[in-house]
Image 1: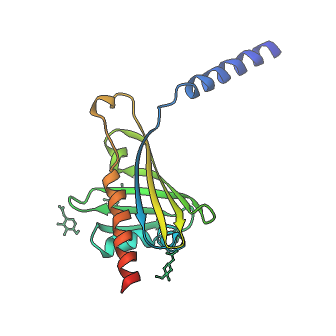
Image 2: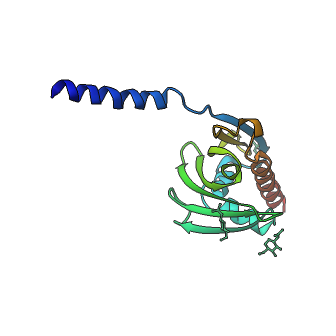
Image 3: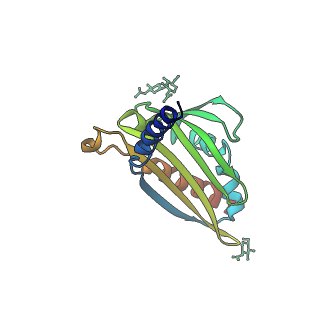
Length: 176
Ligand SMILES: *[C@@H]1O[C@H](CO)[C@@H](O)[C@H](O)[C@H]1NC(C)=O
Ligand SMILES: *[C@@H]1O[C@H](CO)[C@@H](O)[C@H](O)[C@H]1NC(C)=O
Ligand SMILES: *[C@@H]1O[C@H](CO)[C@@H](O)[C@H](O)[C@H]1NC(C)=O
């Protein structure tokens, strides 16, 4: 009886290890942009739904539908892009006001629709001086088995465009 149990345990444990010793490697795409406004001002836009609302208002994206929550951790949003109306659903998983760091987990769409198994976007707003900060946008993703040859990639251009939009908006607002 005991011997059987330990055999079962070994097999289960062995499978578990087998899965985890061979994870799909995460790839990274990064964009950095310096903004001449304080980090706290940039963070106010990035930390909740402000970023996506600004992007809709400025016609960078077609629409945002909040499927769950109010902008805090656990919020789920469906974003529709221009042109072509492709879409992406993501969940806000980390909002760290101390580090000024936000992480979102892709649930559906964008690269997940064309061969990625994982898509995680992380924003870090770093203070450079009293009046200047850096927006770092990083996308981590993994490609599903069988899709390697197609080399699917999430759109770093879109998160770079979001950062540029925030920069233009805040810098012009400051000088107005
Ligand atoms: C995208 O959606 C908008 C609003 O529903 C629509 O007017 C537009 O024709 C759509 N564009 C494409 C390329 O399908
Ligand atoms: C987002 O919402 C649109 C409109 O309801 C829907 O057609 C689309 O499938 C959704 N996209 C994702 C990735 O969930
Ligand atoms: C930051 O900007 C304010 C207002 O424009 C200015 O008075 C101040 O000297 C600037 N500080 C630095 C460190 O550049």
